[in-house]
Length: 205
Length: 191
Image 1 (cartoon, chains in turn red, brown):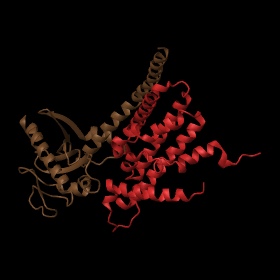
Image 2: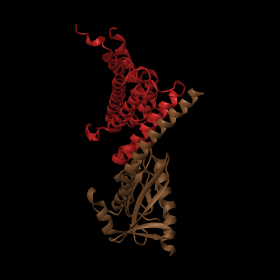
Image 3: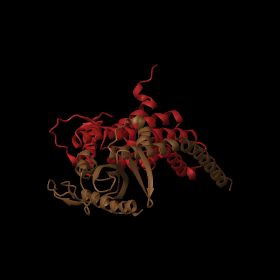
Image 4: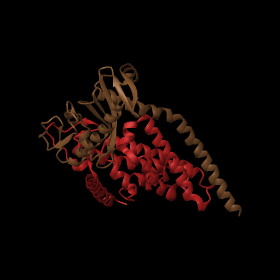
């Protein structure tokens, strides 16, 4: 007898990460970088890719070693793993995408302190097998990226009149400078949280 | 005791493996990163000197047209087109501002400016890095210093328009240019 898709463990892992336990809007993790790096679509995509990479690497390492990691040093293990892969991302961007690296500024290095990674390692990877952990890492990473990107779409469009550097708004359009500055990030994130949480509540259990 | 020892061994092993990976990444990316920095510098100097170049041939154009000269402990980039460029640096409103400035060989008239790095407020202070604004410096003279005036009011050869809404950033840029000019001018003429 075929198992209903929505009852499988993998389906639930992915749906939790993508929507039900959305890292930004439900768990409210990774807010700092979401506010800072969502001013341009290009930067949001690069940041998202970096976070997905570090999440995946951490998920694989922690879940493979989960039976070996001594309980009392598990947090140090996460930190060492996350820090190493973050430095790799930072160096990679510096070497191949110096302009994006400059625009993201210190936030590439601050992936180390992104609570999504630490949080998922402690809540999920340390207890689950590598396959589930990879699914979880992808779902959470994609969630983070689509949130940043959709925030950046709004902010870049209104703040610069462009999307990915291409001019969208007509010539006479006055950019809303506030949108690309810190206050704009708070407005957009607040609206995002409000909309997604309202939608999530009406979803049947 | 055995448990403690295992913890230490575990961390040592994991740490060594990850450190090895980092050393490898560093070994591989270091020359590329250094190259990027160098190209960026050359690109901006060429732009300040208004020498045309294609992205792929920065090195060659630089080699052909520019000679690097040390004078009084400062580095000057002398172009075959009778121009001198040097790098300037200082604190802006929010962070460092770095750039290149090109002048005539007597170091009196500004011929071009580019900004290499700035952290001013996006959309406001960051406009100091826009070509439109930087072009206002062309033909201006440090006599004896550049001075900021209200937007659209610059008439004298040492007056520069401020950017409305970004007075502090434009002020910082003028201050940086004045300070750097003083030092480089002394070094250039000191010998």
